Amino acid sequence: MIDKILFEKLKSNFTEAFWFIKTNKVRTFLTALGIIFGVASVITMLAIGNGAEKEILSQLELVGVNNIVVTPIPDEKDENSNEEGNDGNNKSNETKRYSKGLDILDAESIKNNIPSVKLVSPEIIMDTYVINNGRQNPVKLIGVSSSFFESSNIHIEKGKDFSKHQLLNALPVCIIGKKVEKKLFTGESALGRQIKVKDVWLQVIGVIEEKLISDQAQENLGIRDLNQDIYIPIKTFLIRYKDRKIISSTGPSISGGGGNIIIVGGQQNGPKKRIPRGNYHQIDKLTVQVSNSNELKATAEVLSKMLKRRHNDVLDFEITIPIQLLKQQQKTKQIFNIVLSIIAGISLLIGGIGIMNIMLASVLERTKEIGIIRAIGATEEDVILQFLSESVLISVGGGVAGILLGIIGAYTIEIFSGIETVLSLTSVLVSFFIAVLVGLFFGIFPAKSAARKRPIEALRTE
Image 1 (cartoon, one colour):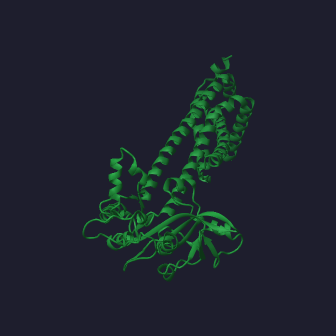
Image 2: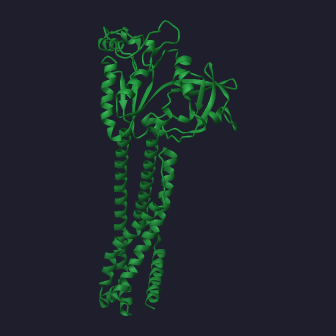
């Protein structure tokens, strides 16, 4: 019985509140603007934050949480040595002639001498083309070792990985990206087919599963679009494309022609010998995976010292820890989210103050009405409920409009800026709940102010 009476009372209060809001549409809309923009800001902020978290997790999957990346520092161009005023550059350039740059023996030395290293994956990268229907389609050709797919967290969707026999004997086989398969073999399987990359025919033995790689990941972390790559054994690359010598753990072996054939090994006793430029930086990238992420920094320091010693004290390489770059990005995005939170909070505060002001003005305008309802038996609680109903209804309306605006804003940001946004039911419910709380909180003071008015004094008000 009591519940039924309370329900009827609330129903009557909200009906009257709706009537009052309907008769003051413009004022109500202006009052709710702060709530609308505040809720929209909260939803947009949470969508951007969720998108950033998803992006960072996907980037972590791509770069590997335990990986260290070593890349060569390119040698200065020969023409610099002929320019005046470049003595410092000439000296640095001359010093680099005593370093062989990054090579396969570096990879083997790292794997064999640093206990914390789990695996090492050398890569050679070349921009080239694959011939299809008489047309040249640009692709990246990547020479890889047996540990590449594990270190890069790449899974083969169709076919199989390179066998030990294929890797050791430099066979003309390849594994291609999903986009390459779609472009060359529309609607057909690529397995077992032959493709001509530059001047060499390669047999397709596998296709990697498609990876979603954002523009941010490619720009900030230097991650390639793996779906457009063609992978071949690193020895196949050296023999058939680079015409350079192959170095194995049993000792250096020589292949290829030209006048630049020399044996490049580790540290040599005796005086330093100049390294021909054609053999400088045999490989383009080294991915070093450690067993424990806590050992990343220490391993990177040991790695730097080892490579510097092997390169005759020449710093012609750069070491990057991708996880640290991601953490820096995460901090930047967190600061951005904090700024958005402050903006959203200010908007909601302004909206709440607006509700309080309009309700106070309404109390003054309706003083006589308050006196009448008090005179016919309404209690202070009834008056408080009446005005609270109005403030909550305004905030609920503003919250619904803010949710719609926030959803539209999130999708608009994703479309025009490329920033990934992720909307969730939780963020919508949280935003709506905050809007209702703002209406309740800022409606209490005007409601109490109305309830405290004495009926006789209120009736005398003109």
